[in-house]
Image (cartoon, rainbow, N blue to C red; front, side):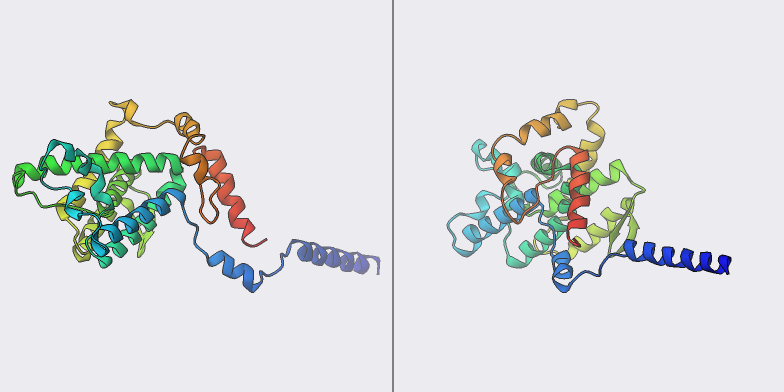
Length: 270
């Protein structure tokens, strides 16, 4: 009898422990909140600027889109084209496709490296890809016959080239689980169906990412350190972006980003 009572007590203790460990099922509101996508700060700002310039150039004709597209230079003052081209889109379909690619790949990279460094790399890789395109395009077609490029896809391919150089055997989920090293070829094939997309521009974007990845040891001042990124968070515009509601600002410190992402995930079910 004593042994039987002890076994029953042990069963009751196990049931109590299971009840304590078992969390309550999330409510419908909590489940709906978990489906709301996280809005990365720099990615949203870049896409928003692209939307604004699209309406100013294509819809309302306030600005001339040819002034910003990277192609032939009519004067030395148009050197800004090596950066401005990434924000220009000629059609709504091209803009939607470019924003979707930027959201998928740019948002993931911003979460991994932080908002400040992501903004820096976006500008740097856009300029580097534009310079490579001018050099190669002028050799193949001539500077006067160079076809203009525009859109976020060139920068997205730069991110892909950078990822391939740093971790080629890493697996990513894109349509299906594939190795990162195969991702550029798949995206190049898909870019054939993106309106106004340039194959040569996308290849130059991949080259910019690879060149940056392997050139950092030789040109170290082009790489933003974590200390520099943390100090820049205290200045405009990053100090104001932290307080904007509805978007996520990722810290330059890896430890802070890891804790914030973990806490945010659990907070959805709290």
